[in-house]
Image (cartoon, rainbow, N blue to C red; front, side):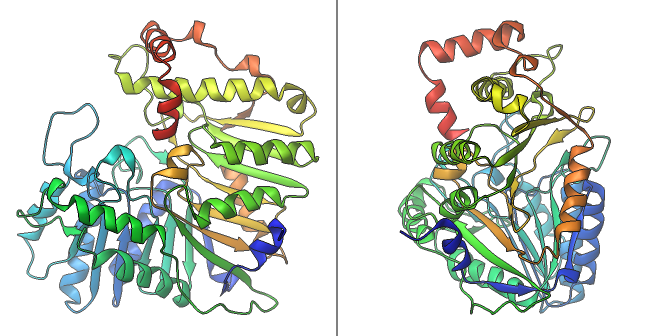
Length: 446
C-alpha cells in the first residue's frame, strides 16, 4: 500500500515562484484587487463562482466585465455560475427570476456580449451545485471561496470573511481555463443565462445526468513540472461525488500524513466520516490539531433571537451541537492543548473560511467545506501547495494570525451552549428533527 505522503508527492505539479504568490487579508482588499485585475485585463477573463448577485457589488463586477469586453471585443469573457442558484431568489424571499434577470438586463445594454453560463451539477440544487473556485484574469489566478455579492465584497457595513490568494502563473491559469473549456462551457447541459429563451431544467434532465457522469471522470490536465530549489509546487485538484473523488482522497491523505501539526478551517462543523476518522487517528498519534470555525452567530444562516424565526436559522445551532459533542469527546486533548478549537466572531460579520495546513509543508486552498455535502454532492476543487523549503511559511503565518485576531480559544465543551439554552423556536425545531430522525439526513445535504 502506498503511503499517504507518497501519494501526495506523486501528484502532477506546477512550479510556482513564491514571490508571485500573494495573500490578501480582507474582503475590501479582495474586491479592490478583483476590480483592478478586471480593468487591466486584455486577453481573457474567466469567473467561476456559485453566484454573482443582483445587488450593488454584483452589478459593479458585472459592469467591469462588460466594460472590459467593450475595450477588447476579441477578449474571452466567460462567467460560470450555478444554474439553479441563478434562477431563484434568496432563501425566504418572494419568488423571482433570480440573478438571471440581471444578466438579461445587462446583455441588452452593451454591444459586445459576454458569456454567462448556468452550470447544472444536478437536476435539483439540493443534490449538488457548482462549487468550483477560481477567477482567471490573463495569467493571474485569484483563488477564493467567496461568491460575488455585497457581503462577500464588503460593499456596505457587513462582510463575510474568506481567504484570498493571488497567484501569477500562466501554466496554472491555462490549466484552469482549459478545464472550463473542455468539461463545462461546451457541454449541452450548460446554457446561457443572459438570454430570455433558455431550456427548463426538466427538458435537459438527461443532459445533466450525462454531464455529472463526465464531471466525475474529469481532472485538471497539464504537463507536470520539476520543481527546482527556490520554488513551490501547486497541484490543482477537482472532484465530484462519493466515488473516485481525487480531491476527497487527497484531503484525507493530507491529514493521514501529518507528523507534527494540522490546522483546519471550516465554516460549518460537520465533518464527513472519513475526515473525522483521520482527525481522530492524528490526535492518537500525537499530532497537534487546531480547528478554526465560525461561532454560530458568525454563520451565514444565523438569525438573531429578536428577529422573526425561520427554519433555516436552525442550522448554526445544529453545527454548534456537532462541535460541542466533538469537544466533549476530546475534552482531555483540549486540556493538554493537543487539540485547540478556536471560534471566530467579529461583530455581526460572518465566517466562510476553508482550507488546511499540514506540518508547514503542505497547504490546501479550497472552497470545500469539509462536510458531507462537499464530499458527495457538489463539484469542488482545490490547490494543493507543496512547500518543503518553507518559502511561503511567513505569508501563511501572517494569514493565520489575521484569522486568529477575532477568535477565542475554547477551553472546554461546557463553554459551548447546549440545546436547553437555545431560543424556543430553535429548541422546538431541533427536537422535532431528532424525533423523526431527520438530523442524519440533513447532515448529508447541508
